[in-house]
Length: 238
Image (cartoon, rainbow, N blue to C red; front, side, top):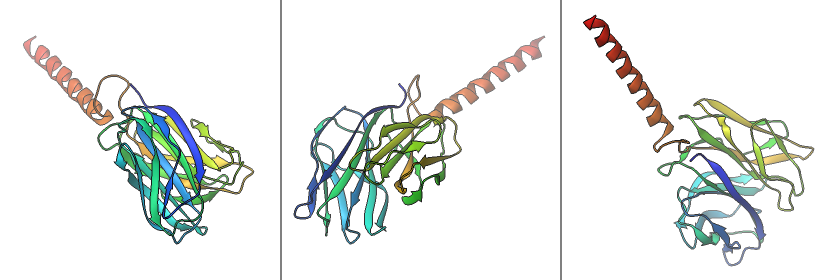
């Protein structure tokens, strides 16, 4: 069915008694969810991201003391669906937390995370990567934050999903840039100061049929070998 974008959402919420609960988001069953959170206090620790439907999410990458703040990226391989309420718990949470959320469909449902870059702060024009993908057909997602109201432009092939908003929440993606396994990068340019986030590669389901891109490549290779064997047998009978 191919990998495709469903929606994005960004919020800023005040922390209360060691936890933050964001406003509910209506989601699609079977989808892939990814979010990045920013906390103004680098002393915060032991964060857990969960929601009321799926339970705990899985952390992809974090930088818990970057420019005096903490940033983390979390994901959920297969979403049960419906109205979800994302909650972040931890110690020493600041009075304010930011969330940038993305929902997609068409991910490989078993172990969709292929690879990711480190979570860093990069100036305008500085690449995230290269990131090495291990299978054909990955989708690339850059998710993170910048200064409020900044507008960013990505390198060719990336779609802008969240940009130039009061929460400084940025989401770019590409379903076509990583068609074959290899090394890929994301570069954002702007009159703004910098971006803080990471590039993530997600394994996807092929446009036709089921299974991974790797299994289809293997099947094609086997079919080629079988055709060659048949041609050899025919020649032997002439």
